Amino acid sequence: MVDESYAFVVVSNRLPVDRVVDDDGTERWNQGPGGLVTALEPIMREADGAWVGWAGAPDLEHEPFDRDGIRIVPLTLSQDDIERYYEGFSNDTLWPLYHDVIAPPSYHRIWWDSYVSVNQRFANAVAGITAHGGTVWVQDYQLQLVPRMLRQLRPDLTIGFFNHIPFPAYGIFSQLPWRTQIVEGLMGADVIGFQRVADAGNFSRAVRRLLGYTTKSPYIDIPARGEHPSRRVVAKAFPISIDAQAFEQLARRPEVQARAAQIRQDLGNPTTIMLGVDRLDYTKGIGHRLKAYHELLGDGRLVAEDVMLVQVASPSRERVETYRQLRDEIELTVGRINGDFGVLGHEPVSYLHHGFPREEMAALYLAADVMLVTALRDGMNLVAKEYVAARFDDDGVLVLSEFTGASDELRQAVLINPHDIDGMKDAIVRAIEMPRPERRRRMRALRKRVRENDVAHWSREFLRTLARHSDGPSEGLGELEWTLERRPRS
Ligand code: G6P
Image 1: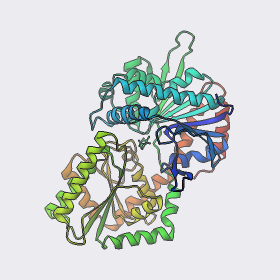
Image 2: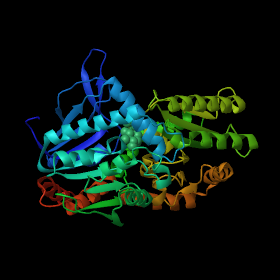
Image 3: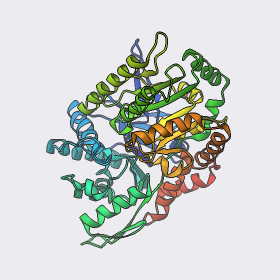
Image 4: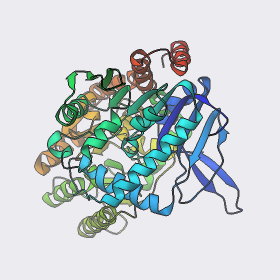
């Protein structure tokens, strides 16, 4: 037990900061790419907040420290924990299962045991630093057992959970040998948030089937049992977003605009630049996108000299076999396209296997006439929202898969089914040829939506719901409500 306590604690697998060690051995913590920290930072600062998570490297032991007014509490994962809990159960069982089994999930009891014990360690760490009556917000699929474990350790706490990825239909979820334990784990929370209405519905159905509780959207009622009184849980959609205003400001910077012009020039000033930006993940439909593009070049509907596809594929989970195979497949396909249609000095695909700073991303978005988001399944897809936020010029066309959470909101995009290659090809040509007034009309509508439903709106809605539905007085939430009321709407 640590002799310090915090009224508001966020817990996620990864900390919002990455540890970087310079050549001379000095240590720095850089802010990670996620928007979550931007959204929560002001609230956490005012509400005396702490963030518990893994520092991203094996066996790294580090004392808690303060960063920008937030207490950062690093948790150590051993090499075994990483292989079984993180790469194994989280990313080779739950990830493919929750993304509609696009890749086959592996079920290993030894991975499950590790998932249970690491979740227990996260729960213990949080229980040890949260003030009496405080509030804890648990993030994502890696920590689904934490809400129940935490409630058992600390019944005084108010507990929220948010699932950043899809929650699958019962027919798929029921494959999981530990389906009942997962659902029970989540039901330890007071509010369970999902990206889409359909995800919340899938979860409620799983609860009905597995635990027999009564549900009446958005409520799930747990009957009294023994000394435990009855309890009401909220399961509801809260679509996540980005800090749209900050992204727009970034794109408006003169140096970012100059960089966008430079990128176009460096690419040989093609008539059309298309852009894909993804973690290198099989859920993103990068292969489907390349297939459509390859065929369009082959059909002669696109001419290699006029068009360019920039594909940023940031490295991800590289020790998981499915991800290694995907990388080989994608790089083979890129090589084929460039081999078939490249000429000296011009290749139709520019493939970049690394991440970029936010400034460079904003410049790329500005330089791209067409943004391709062709995920086969995606909880939300924040890249789509970033593209829209960056286009302060009301130009550019977003081609967006119907299988992303973002497509529920971004109805003015050119919506596609990435499995339908012919349909996707037609949509790409339509996007390229779309007249300026239509581009402008669509982009303005998209921008309005992204501006109004930004990440501050998301966290405010979630935390308000949590404040209203927690039982009894809650110290942490009292302060939070106050903080939320005082914050100007952005
Ligand atoms: C998704 C998940 C996050 C995860 C991120 C990067 O967005 O919802 O929880 O942090 O991918 O994956 P990684 O395995 O590198 O943390």
